[in-house]
Length: 205
Image (cartoon, rainbow, N blue to C red; front, side, top):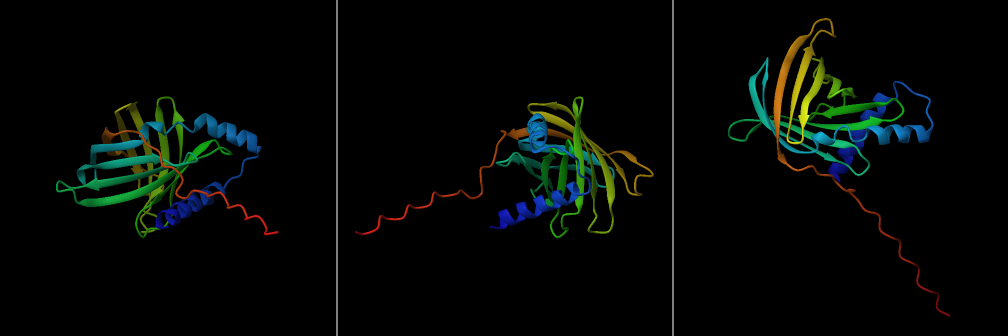
């Protein structure tokens, strides 16, 4: 039940982002756009171990997992860990393609921080590019320009520029990651399954 509530709340958060702009497309056009783009995060599916550098915290290490939900949304968990396996930071992200606006939309969910860290993404050549805001609930919002690049079956690189002043100035490569696959791509089926209704017993003559 808790998992269903979390997913439902994250979907509402993405819907709020989408409601900011409305594109005039038919349902068929929306589905065609989704079909054309739905595989763009396939490279991220599975389990990963990463190492990297953050200009505020120095060297970092952790685990990253992503799974495809029944209707094509991508649910991911990013976890920064210590040498003894302790968790320093963890966030959950839901990615969902918006066929009306031809873009990916994201919402991040840190514990206790609501659903305010939203962003958008698109495939550009050989890179996935994302613009997302973090730290909104804490009152310290920062904008990130994220690039997934050098993507292969068992590895990818990740880099992000960061602005803490509303985009006036940017710190280039504020954080960089190198990820290596440790688990195969995977999907998640329905959280609940509909059961066929029982036929009413025949009436007694």
